[in-house]
Image 1 (cartoon, helix red, strand yellow):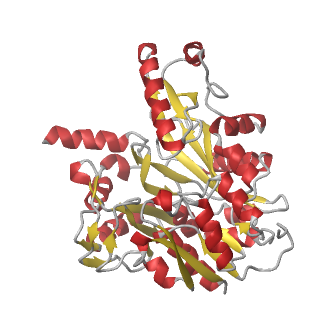
Image 2: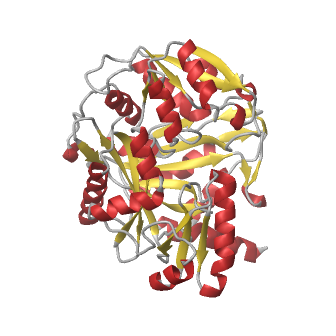
Length: 459
């Protein structure tokens, strides 16, 4: 088994993922002169990440349970292609401690935190305990998994509360409960959803912060105790706990608050002895008080927003840390805001009909371009979007020297982005940019739901 420190550069890396993020990792590997191995399911045979990689290997049938979630198939693929390391991307097995263990036990390096760190921080109730010991502000809550006395625990916290799956993500296994008479039903619903999605029905409680912002801090930590925290991302524009738009810096966060956020994130990461790139998420009240929510022990979908603002390649940073290289970036450099950036997640969904997924064949694909524009996507004209996976087809990342110019440039990009053959969420992003609350930076996690209710009222 290779040592985690003082190692030689990787020769070949297998990307245990698909589509946009696999292509994103391949591009950085090419710049680092490291060979790439793509994996693909039978449904992804014609995906761009397969074409762009140095090698590609089929790992199974179309359903993710038979391919991208098959640990044995992925480890075997890495072995037969003689990969030194495995990059998990995001989603799928990226936060699965068993996968990280399997990779390292097979003699390869998992490009991410240790399995122990994933286990500790992946269990959200444990992560809260770590945050509490590190002196990071947390919302009042159960401080652990709730049992049969959950009524007494909820009363002590005070309604409204949020019920959260201990192992969770993507808004699954979460329910808001505003009064005690609804608690039994909300518990049953949250536990059932958690069991169906994560195979674990344990939940914990947090005080529900009304009208919060979702603020997160990207962090990087090496093997030698060095930790840096970047400028925050505002991810408040969400629908059913799924982010649609992310921007940095937040229009709500001032310099003093930014410094406090970065200090809190760094303290938590050090306390957890974390290694790699990750994200510490916070809820921020209208008073600018903020509370720790969770740690994502992986690269996030919205990482290009931070890359734009800090001028760093976060995937390259992940790989360098995994190779045993120390961070050379100082906190002053990492925390500097160099521009304003926004990411629009463009999905193959019909936003006019409850965001129904719209897989199909692209008859036209003309992405936006020009100064300050980046499009991360694995799409091309003639490509058929499979129905088995996430509906994300492109990330439009726009930068500008001010937020006012940023919004104007985003409008231009969304107007010139042409996608034919399938419905997309571009029209909804145009509605977001036209919304006065959003333009003023007056956002919270409930704004999109309010926008949708207003649209319903007009019909």
